[in-house]
Image (cartoon, rainbow, N blue to C red):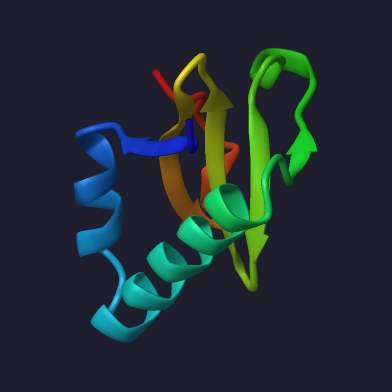
Length: 87
């Protein structure tokens, strides 16, 4: 069974903050990295322990691995993404 990528509702707000070309490029890269290439990304530590990150240029995608696939929790610029932990 192929992995699924699910998005938390707050990710829509994160994407609205980006211009459309950046948002589309990031969404395409997420799908490619997680579904096609499998488990990719670095494990985070500290208050983000148990979560993973993908680097997309100056942006970071914070996600969790689930039984069915992946849950994307946050997409933000690297200077903002680590300021508050994803809910």
